[in-house]
Length: 521
Image 1 (tube, one colour):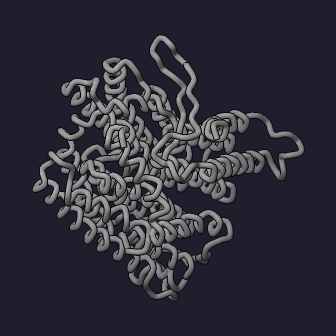
Image 2: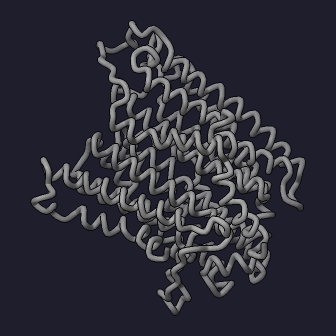
Image 3: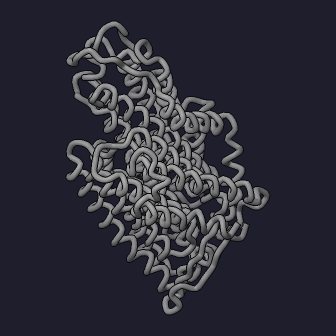
C-alpha cells in the first residue's frame, strides 16, 4: 500500500520526463506523434489501475485513519517531512483524479487539440496529474503548497498554447489570480507552521488549534482562505474562471472543472477546519454568505447566457454553473457540521463527474458545429440534437438533469446535504443567518433547473430537417466509439453515486466525524 500510493504520486512525473524522450523504434507506430499520445494513455491508465488497487486494498472498516502512509525526513531544519497518506476524505478525490486524467488522455489520443508538439502536450498533462494527485495525498503543509502550485504552469500552457480565441489573455488572468492567491496562502501556512512548531497536517489536526492563539487562527484562516477561495473559485474571486474555461481546450476544461477546483475546497476541509477551528467559526458566517451569493449569482449569469439573443457561449455557461455548484460545497463547509461537510465532499465528486461530462459534450458539439454560441446552435429551429444525433442529445440531456440535482443522480445528494447542514449549523454559528443562506441555496436550485432546461430545449429540440442559422449544411455525426469510451464511465458513476450514495458517504463520514472532533473521535 505504501508503494502504491508513492507510485501513484510519482509515476506521472516520471512519465512526463519519458514523454520528452525519443520513442523507441519499435514503439513509434505510424508516427512519433501517435507514439507519445499512446504513451500518455498508457501512463495514465497504469496510474488509474494503481489507484484502483489502492482503493481495493484500503481498509474500509477504518476510513477515519490514514493508510498507506510514508513519513520521511526531508528538510530537518524546518521539520518538513515527505509525509503521504490517504483516508476516507482523500481516497475518492484521488480515484476521480486518476480516472479523469485517463479519460482525457484517451480522448486526446483520437482528438488532439490544435497546437504545438504533442510531446509537450502529453508531458504537461502528466505534470498536471502529478500535482493534483500529490495535493490529495500529502500530509505536510509545505508539501501541500508545492503540490498546489505545481499545477499552475502546466494549466497555463495548456490554455495559452492549445486553447481557442482569447487564450493568451485567459491564461494570464488564470495564473495571475492563482499566483497572487497562493502568495497570501503561503504566508498563512508559514504562520501556522512556525507558531505550532510543525508542518505535519496530522499532528496539527490532532492538536485542533490548541497551540495557536485566536489571533493567529484568524490571520491564518484569512490568508489561507483567500488562496483556497481563488482556486475554488468563490464569488467574488471567480472572474478568471469563465475566461479560462471558454479559452481552454476540451480536456483542459474537463480537468479544470473536474480536478483543479476541488483542490481549493479540499484545502478548506483538510487544513482550515481541523487546524484552525476557532478562526473558521469566526469566518464561517462570511464564508456562508459568499457561498450563498455565489449560488444565486452563478445561476443568474447562466440564465442570462441561456436566453435567446444574448450570444451565450455554452462553455462559458457551464463555467458560471461551476461557480454556483461550488457555492454549495462552500456552504456545506461553512456550516461546520458533519452533515454539511459530508455534503460538500459528495458535491465535490458529483461536480467533477457531471461537469467533466458536460465539458466533454460541449467540446464535441463545438467540434461538430464549429461554434459553442448558443444562439448560432439553436438558430430559428433549434439544433435538434434529438433528431440529428440522438445519442449525443440524450447524453447532453442526461448530464443537464444530473447537474440540476435530479433525485437518483449524483448531483442531488451533495446539494441536499449541504443545505441540510446550513439549515442546522454548528453550535455557536448564527442560525438565522444560515437559514437565510439555505433559502438562497434553495432558490439557486430553481434557477439551476431553469437555465439547464432552457439549454436542453434550445440545443436538443427543434426541427431535425432544418439547419441552424446561419451556417452551411452540416453532416452531424453522432457519438463516436472513442467518445463513448471516454464518456460512459462518467455517466455510469453519476448513476451509481446517485442510487447508492452510501458508497461514498461510508468513506467520508467517519473521517469527517474525526476531523471535526479534533482527531479524538
